[in-house]
Each structure stands twice: as C-alpha cells, then as structure tokens.
Image (cartoon, rainbow, N blue to C red):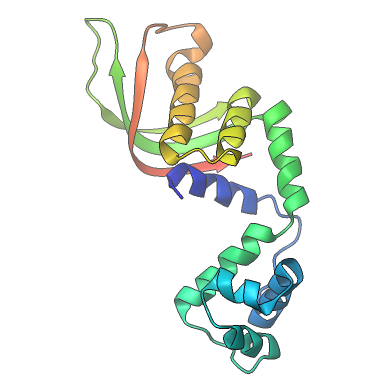
Length: 184
C-alpha cells in the first residue's frame, strides 16, 4: 500500500456508522464470521490455528503488538462494507472528495514564471469525476504512482489552474508527500 491508498483507507474508516469490535475475543469472533474457519483467520493474521482458538476462548488476551495491529487492520478492512460502498458511490457521483496535503509541488510553465519545486500545504475539494477515477483505479489495482497522478491532475486543474480560469499551460509535479489526508 502507498500513501494515497492509506489515506483512502483512513477516510473509509471515518464513515463507519458503528464502531468495530474492540475486545480481542469479539474481533476474532467477527473475523471467524467473515472468513468462516480458524485456518483462514490464522492465515490472514500470520499466526497458528491454535493461537486463534486461544484468542477466541479468551485463554490468551494480550497478543504481541504486531499481531494486535494485524487483527485491527483485518477487522477494519471487513467492517461495514455496504456503508463504505455507499459513501464511495456518493463521492463519485455527487459530493466529490477533499484532499489535504503538504507536499512538494514543481511546475513546468512558460518562460518568465518560477518552476522551482517548493513545499505547500493545500486543502482542495475535487469534483466527483476525480473521486470516481481514483476509486476505479484503486479497485483495479493501480499502484501508488497511478493514484498520485490522478490526485496531481485534480489538484492541478482545481487549485493551480482554478478550473481553467488561469495558468492553462501549467503542468504540476506532485512529489515528496509529507502527509496526505482524504475525506469524503
């Protein structure tokens, strides 16, 4: 996973209508309900089947931090898929997405303007077309470079070119992401 993919994943967890299970036992039972067997849960978490059974019974209550993180990630990835799907569809058809980032932006522009890359902090609302392209590319397995190109194009068009009202020949390079946050 890359920076853009991680930001989209975090944004999806913010749309939950209920909180996912918190206790270890409840999380393991939830995963067993989704994956059906202890073998599948053990494979997903990278532990033995016996460990999964111990977690489920409550015999073992504090797994190592790395395993706890994997359990949390597995539960969040499967929690409320219909809510996630509905919010993605809504963003892709009507509301769009908001990108907040601090990254280095460079330009290739006509002579007489600056093209030195510099760190900028931006919060920009992108229209539904960019959300749709982003979600579609992510679903088709696009790598972080491709997702970054879609975001860069959206920022270029909406922020730097102001929807076509200025700097129509400006091309923006989106590099060195310090942080990126997405909401929809």
